Length: 428
Image (cartoon, rainbow, N blue to C red; front, top):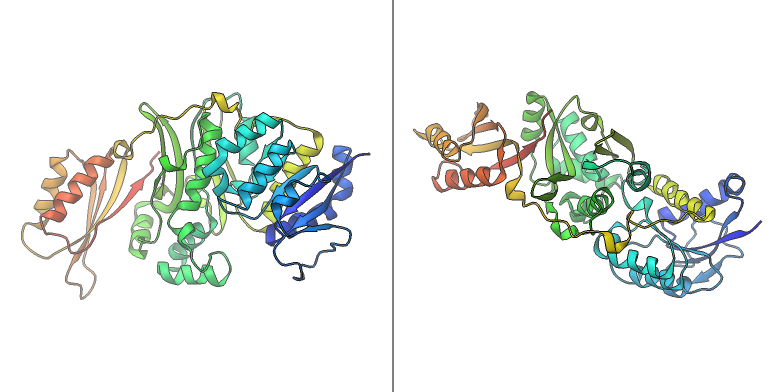
């Protein structure tokens, strides 16, 4: 019985979990693949650190690129992260050698996915990345293989557990954004510098990968409109609740008449939608095909969940499974026509802090009418002791461009005292 010798670069939380899972599931994996799967070499920065792993007999490399070039390994697993070197250099070295690569590195794939897929094709190596999107949810294989008979019209989801945790705590416990962010950092759900998560960039990287898989396009993270959650207030979430919605940071890619629309932003979704029920650090991905529509829910991060996806890819490697990284040969991946965000159509929630002077309501109504925006409802609230009133507008379907023009005109009229808040609404 042959052995699949695994070279593992990165022994952090995920890397250590992969090592333990391969040890724990050794007999079962051997029975199912006909091969033994064993980590025979590792690369990590601190050799003296106690990780609780038995590394006796495991070769140690200071340089992950040297590990990738080591002739004694059969597959290279990259769990270091980052969209540049050493991760890119190591993955490139392994692919150029013709050995399979398994990675959880969404930033690298979002930036260099097409290049790496081409290298894999040229050398005949496999490029596997189930762990790069939504942790333990098997969305990559679902889009690439299980739904191959479908024409995908839309893929969307909650792809960042940090943001979903913050929004859940805000809504359920009536806490401010900053209080919930601090708690997320204390619990280890958010980094000391949370910018990558809360400003939407992590979600955008994952969406770029899903878009390629769903629509057969080149990975293009730069085409994604990105908006994070740091501007949201408790008042917005309370208003959403009153209106029958929950606010989620969604990544959305949808086929339109003008191209593929890719966007990341806070979204109001109806409470009865499955994705609205997803709370805490959990992720969810919804796929709408012409034959089936489904929603997958599960843990989006953490050592065990991500390791589960990595080991699943190693299982495929051990079985000799082959296929194109993004479902099609690189030469057949199209450069998607980008649908401009200004053309996005849908309902909008608009919150205005308005000054107390005659004609304010008429001014707002006129500017909306100028852009042919029909209003579904108008709510006005004046908190006790406040000098300004809070006006909430809910629009019928309109365009992003019209909303932005109307708001700019309202601001120029001098009837608002703070930056307006705009949240897009998804409706049945």
